[in-house]
Image (tube, one colour):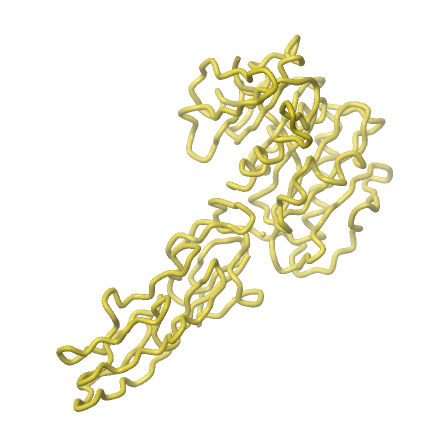
Length: 407
């Protein structure tokens, strides 16, 4: 069978550091420091200027930094143990072999000039090497800009790029957290689920959830399609609610846009990581919304999509689709993911079908950079939370979360 795309909506984002200072090299036993013999940590903690007399080597501290140099341990900036250079016997201070700071577990922590890590997981040039938001590196590790690669994200995040904060960053929220309903446009409702430790200085990933036909926002607001616990406080979820329980492919694009504007104005959102997830008619509606606003939504997940027409055109966008073997009649794989695979430049080929009592998720090959498409086939019916034979919980969240968190 061929793959089929999935859809989802919710949203969510970061900080770190580097400093520079110098300390004079102490003369070793029986020796005197040479002119200019000062141990100084540069960006990343390399000693500058301090050369040892023959035979003089300073043992590296664990993590290897000079005075003023700091290393990340799993992303937090920590001073290395014993991090001041000690003078070698008979000479001046010299960094040990490989005297640049060695990164702690979690990735290279070599900041660009000034060494400021901004919330959102990117390393941007700073001025003066200070820490943003309490001096911890972002939980959603992204690629470094102007520095070295960031470490792995605490919540499984991947290459996030530079965060773009929404207008709500720095503001006290006026919207209500789950389970309280928020109202927009007079009568339309939605539910927001934000982390208990929410801070308005960190831009969060945002995921919109869309329920199936005949449902409401309350059916997705509790566990957010099973992603709430997996998100580890990195993401804000918004559960949308169709008028009368059924999605309108025209009117509800305006509704979704209005909700997004309200959330971005009130909460701190990374506007580069706004995503959609939906089931059945909600999955089909997520496709419509994602394609109607090019550049706004980062990825879509759609479970057993149907009931709202597939868009006729769409800019390339990452897509994850799923469909049960007993739900294929009139709702084939090709209508689920192949069209998105074509838009994303992927190779269209017959993909594996799930075996009895199990599931199989397969990425398309040859997709455009940053535009993956994944198809999940499973032995089951019309549901966003299928289970394999003999299992009590669904495997779906563990497939969907890595797809979302790579962005």
